[in-house]
Amino acid sequence: MGQIKVEKNVGGIEGLHIILPAVHGDTRGYFMETYNKRDMEEAGLNMNFVQDNQSMSVKGVLRGLHFQKQYPQGKLVRVIKGKVFDVAVDMRKGSKTFGKWFGVELSEENKKQFYISEGFAHGFLVLSDIAEFCYKVTDFYHPNDEGGVAWNDPAIGIKWPEVIGEYKGSADCKGYTLLDGTALNMSEKDKNWNCLESLL
Image (tube, rainbow, N blue to C red; front, side):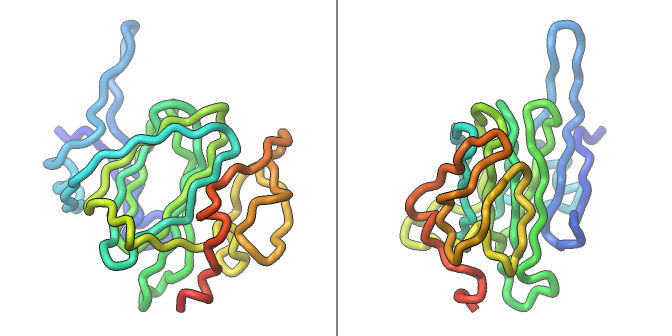
């Protein structure tokens, strides 16, 4: 019996899938399968993972939007502590949904997983005090193959929850905060990604 439920092509974008694992709980706690190759294949998801990654971030951290240019990665992402808003943007030239985005809240409570196929830019915003983020990838990290796109590109128009601020022509997060006043926190690299138009 399958231990996952898959909502395929979420947001009308082919290649983005929400995965809900079956959670078996009682007074002692819970158990769930976070990955099962057979169940994934039965759902039509035939990915081959080569690496597992984990990060911890504090509230207000925004990571992204990242992709690999020559060695694109599929990613199966989830949150094991805290809460994030996770986003994928279609970067596949020739795709009918090129430049479109989809976002989903991932948390330790909802236990949702998000599978992002190869060819998407990916990022997330931390909404809890801290968040521990885990993901499997279908190709190795290639440090000289990194690409990115501005998280606040108005042409993409991502609606980041709780974010207050005004676009001033760059990906710099200066002046942006969450509703509670927490300043957005980004790497220097992420502050310098260009808009989608510049990548065409």
